[in-house]
Image (cartoon, rainbow, N blue to C red):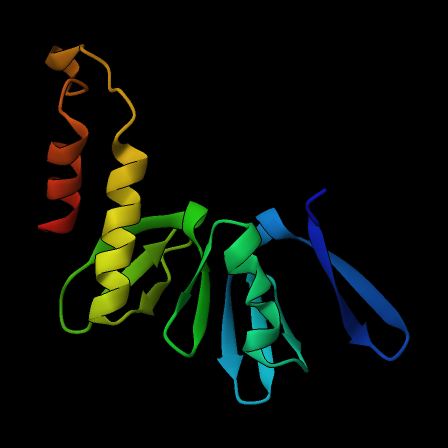
Length: 138
């Protein structure tokens, strides 16, 4: 059975349950990690980012460089520019390196390979590769 939440110490007297699906990203802050949630709340915990690497194995998270673990489900856009970045559903931009860009592009393309509608008069008839090209070439 998959763990669906993590627990963190909020202070000396309380523990908080954070559901995995609510996490946008985790960011390294030295010996601490900031956990950013989809409701824009964030928590600073006294754990190294590598403590949370298990999320990349068991859930749809990706370790982007040394500083971030990103929830793939909440990526709106990846952009190849200087610097490369991903844009999340809350419009935050997270910098990524060239290797991360290539991996994330591949992930988005493989996700987009599901059949699309044939209703071309509404713009839904484009192939998934055309859609991805439109996203990545902007």
